[in-house]
Amino acid sequence: MSPHNVLSPRQKALQINLDETIYGSFAEIGAGQEVARHFFQAGGAAGTIARTMSAYDMIMSDAMYGETGRYVSEERLISMLKTECSTLMQRLDLERGESSRFFTYANTVTAKGYRGAGNYHGWTGIKFQQNPGEEPSQVVIHIKLLDNQNLFQQEAIGTFGVNLIHSCYYANDSMEHFVRSLMDNLTNERILIDAIKVTGPAFRHMDDRLLSLELVNNCFTDVIMFNDKGKVVQHSEELYKKNIVALRGSFRPPTLLNMEMLRKGAEQFRNNLPEDEGENIMTLAEISMNRLIERGSIDSSDFLARIDMLTSINQPVLISHFQHFHTLSHYLSDVCRRRVAFAARVHNLQDIFDEENYKNLDGGFLEAFGTMFGKNTQIYVYPEKADDEDMLLASDSVTLSAHVKPLMEYFKNHNFIQDIKNFNPNVANIWSRKVVEKIEAGDSTWEEMVPASVAEAVKKSNLFRSN
Image (cartoon, rainbow, N blue to C red):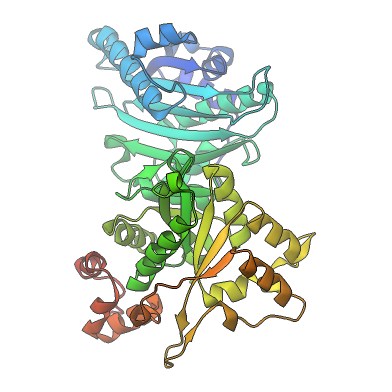
């Protein structure tokens, strides 16, 4: 990763102020006019700022941007950007449109107040012209604020907003440069970026999905999510109050076994839920970063292919930094506020109960199990069949040390770990690697091992072929 020159917020604001072509407006709600303040304090702001706006009152906000059910939301941010950009260009285009690159920056944030604690986050974005007279491009970003004091949160919001505006004009040459510049003078202990969406001519060379991957790769977020249509979404909104069944894997490619595990796991999970929650289940295909870089580096085309294949079967996807089941379980439980279950294979269970995986934890494997099962997480184990054998292996085939075996029995007796009963033995030994081997060998029987839409996607893009 090549280094880049990191400017301070004041240096960035001054550089923009001194560019006579950049001219725009600010609309900030929730934490003061922290972004605009940087431009006023840097000097020369009259050459950049047409107006600033803070519609804190809900009635005033609705009068300006239309009614909304949620004021800190993507919907409200987009309405702010659309209204402010339209107003700016209608009023100033005739006078200075030929020489100006107009922009509108906006944010709507919930920051720490005097009363209580909460989920501090916000939506921030910009509509801007890369060239005079050009159709505006747009960036929409969701951030989480991790500072525990309002003043520090305000400072982080101000710095991030300056970075965003500056990156659009001066760091737009590559996805890597653009994403890294967003976090200049910040750390992931202060702000996380968990959704980013770009549109317009300035981003013809960029892909939302790859931008999102850059966020995870740079540790600017713990997870990113794509919905069943392959669109970037803000995961905490998508998963809130959902009961989740997750399957961890490489999905290279997704197989009939993968889909069967999610389907049967969800069925058994549903039977264990209260009747009024049985339909509120979301299945997730989760890919950890170590799965993406297992061959030494991340292949962008390979990553996009996995997303395309999974969404071809309408399967939402989560990309995470979590190596172990217990850390992912804890994270999902905090986000969804409901129950979490994993569809797993026997070898996954063997890995979960391997004490060596937890030797770096102060509480060892007991800490990991407390984290994983403490919030009522369940594991549904799908029978496993070795490549050249007929015997199906279930959870009782896991090899355990003598002092761990009673722990497994405890979790099984209390239904935290359950074998999936209604399974299809014909798919039990379909592994992704076997599919790839058949594709590379020119053996067309691989098509019988994956969903039809996945087979079409593989053939259409000529995936997994050695030549």
